[in-house]
Length: 276
Image (cartoon, rainbow, N blue to C red):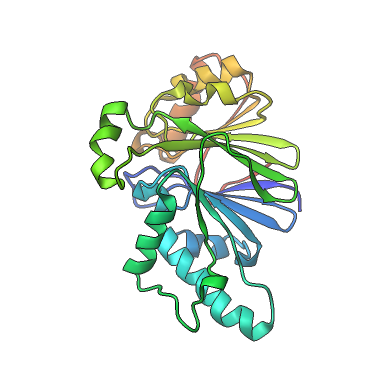
């Protein structure tokens, strides 16, 4: 299978009613991985024809609900597969590590407890489908053979805002990530939620596709960054209400072009598939 990126959900937290929250799936060969997990990703994956047994990892940028609310049902769906289907059919369980910023493992444990996904005779620790890992910026994550990812820090929270949230984040200020992913020779940068359009700039060397959010910025701001870096393709996702629909997509494209960007401009919509 030629590598593809599929937009499962394209909207920001201001859900317009016709689109789902941020979730992207990359497929290459028999491997798939998620970039963020907005709801209802457990439903959208099979609807898109993605076999859950091919899921190799979930890369989580941060824990805001529009990027993570799909995790509990995905966890339950995969755990039921591991506890019932895999055992019945004699196949390997799905073990897809969840990689995210510090406190990710503790937060997933809380979700598991909150939704009664307790370890017992059926739901065992050894077939837990989303083992969570707190990862640091610059860590080299091997997603599958020929697929690697590296997180980088964003300024989604200002220093003051992050400090104010320390008490709600197990005593440490929260951080947000973007990811640079190498999919068998194709390099992708994914912004996550940024505090500045320049958060991604140091990480764009050799990138052939920049996937950048348009929930906190305008098209001309993002286009400027893509133009200066010489990125040949730009996918705009995590759209604010301003950029939804046919008219919104045209506005986003016009703004990007006004910045001087001359590469390919793609405005996301749910179900969009992009060859890599």
